[in-house]
Amino acid sequence: MNPVPLRALEQVALTFPHLDERGKDRPTVDDVEQEVWDALSGYSPVGQAAIGLYKLDRIAETLSDITVSSARVLMSVEKADDGLGEYVRARVSLLAYEQTM
Image (tube, rainbow, N blue to C red; front, side, top):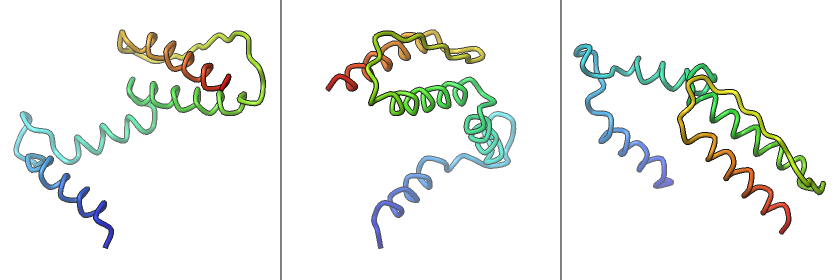
C-alpha cells in the first residue's frame, strides 16, 4: 500500500485527538468542517484570498503566450490580512518573471 495515505491518516490521528463534543472551549469536528467549507466556498477571507490567487495563476497561465507590458490586479477580499496586498504584488512579479523565461 502507498505510504502517503497511511502517513496522512497517522498525522490526522495525532493532530486532531482533541476534536470532540466536549464543550465551547474546544473545537468540534463540526467546527472544523464548517471552517473548511467556508474557506473552500469563498465565504471566509482566507477562502476568498485562495480563490483569488488561484484565478490569478490561471489568468497568468492563459496570458503566458502574450507579452504583457503592464497589468493592474484587483482582488476583493473581505477583512483581508495586511500582508495580502504585498503577497499579491510579489506573486504577480514572480509570474511576470517566469513569463519572460
